Amino acid sequence: MWGGRFAAGPDAVLEAINASIDFDKRLYAQDIRGSKAHVAMLAAQGIVTKADAKAISEGLDAILKEIEAGSFTFTRALEDIHLNIEARLTERIGAAGGRLHTARSRNDQVATDIRLWVRDTIDDLDVMLADLQKALAEKATEHAATVMPGFTHLQSAQPVTFGHHLLAYVEMIGRDRGRFRDARARLNESPLGAAALAGTSFPIDRQATAKALGFARPMANSLDAVSSRDFALEVMAAASIAATHLSRFAEEIVIWSTPQFGFVTLSDAFTTGSSIMPQKKNPDAAELVRGKSGRVIGHLIGLLMVMKGLPLAYSKDMQEDKEGLFDALDTLALTVAAMTGMVLDMVPNGQAMKRAAGAGYATATDLADWLVRELGLPFREAHHVTGKLVGMAVERSVPLERLTLDDMQSAEPRITDAVFDVLGVTKSVKSRTSYGGTAPKNVKAEAKRWLKQLAKG
Ligand code: ARG
Image (cartoon, rainbow, N blue to C red):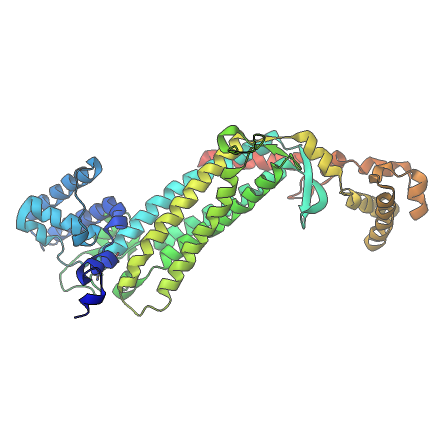
């Protein structure tokens, strides 16, 4: 009736909006794994015959091979991966194929498939994140005593070591891995057998399918099983936090590799040139790690928006979970790989870092601490005296250690020559031996601890 106004017929539009095969074909291996577990259980429970189950299982194996060989034809008219595989099964083995879907719905099937996929994917991610930690911890060992400026507000604060800075990211990534591990434990329950939403009257064995698929247990509530995507949200939240860590590090690499900072040189393998400016070496990989974090976070927000208004149980809106989830985890994996490559190749410029570490009166705190330690001044007073001396040095445009003893004594008469000992950046970092501090010996020990832990896997 309204066809005159529409260029495409309604069926074509429906197919376009409804079909998920273009992206959910990626779940084929998990779908087949789930179906094989399901049919084995149906046979064990006497719901289908052993002969039918065997034909179905072998048919599924053959379809797996077809898909992996690239000879399987995916059809949009068949909507999704579940129906594509089932239709092909019946084509191959005849009517028995139609028995696979007994006591099952696409609702519990797809929930099972995604959980399996997420589990596989975060297991791979864990290995990649551990590799990045290892690359960082190794660099940290090498540069446990390499002095660089430490910043707050991106202003010179106190000298730190490059190794210490890298180990900060090792810690963050350690927590990222922990978040994925926690999410994994929570998502590792089987929705299979919840059927469409209410369970089934067939005498199925959900414990058996859960066990066969490596799940810790079946999900206890059929409505929850088919309508929850909090596991995907949780994993994307973990991914967003990890991406944020990588993005902060990427930003630092972008800054450090400018000629103005010159703290690190990136390898040719992770930089690009300019088509017009011959001198350029751009940190594209780092910029993209930074940029792509936005994409990961966007996908988390996207799915939160999809889910927030959905009544129980399944609604087709939930089909929108996949593209964002896939892309979020693909993107994170890619950025982790890029970061690992950059770290392995990155060459720090110790001299430039050390020079910069002394700029901006970064050892002023060391001077104040000396006044407290050696002269017994209350810290607030020491802060004030040091502030005066910094002001004096600023006025003369010299570093603190170039003030004379007379200058020093004009602010606090009891200051002695010994004060000059603490004004150097190397001394400064060496003195920061408190637990978790930047002293090279701490950094060496921490890097060693991490490398030992990472070797254990
Ligand atoms: N392709 C669907 C999805 O990804 C599978 C579940 C379809 N269920 C349904 N009741 N139409 O969500």
